[in-house]
Length: 98
Image (tube, rainbow, N blue to C red):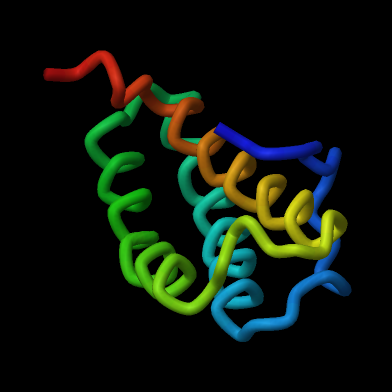
């Protein structure tokens, strides 16, 4: 439920909090680990890798106001979260589980 535009890509120069840098790095690491597993249909292993993102995601939401006043910063944060969402959706649509 983004308020405003979502940037096309994540730009590190808009980061102003260490948690943003940490989450971005964790997402990049997870992409390299998860995509091959998902392509090989090794979903349990892929989900285990995604579970490793819990700490940086929690730290991000504790330290960062996603809806920042600066539209460029806000759009960049949306892009970072969209990248995270895409990573999860590349493995499974968790929202349909229940």
